[in-house]
Length: 98
Image 1 (tube, rainbow, N blue to C red):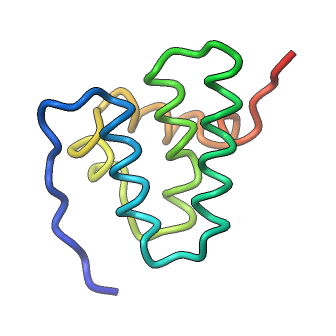
Image 2: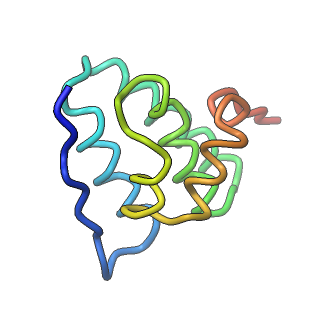
């Protein structure tokens, strides 16, 4: 698969960058992949999580489901979000909402 050039998205907050990045990364996947990502992020938002956690939840499955790497997430969204995706991705896909 051809590697695309990642363009940083300056001037946007972390959630806006994560949403734009998710749309870009999932562009070749079926709609269900993006729907699962939205569902995870929505659950985290409803639980009152911080924006970086919500952004990581949105991108939690991206490393397994696309050809995107953690470096691309760090460059386009933030290093903190990329670290959460790498270290807590499985947990973020299954948030515990009480």
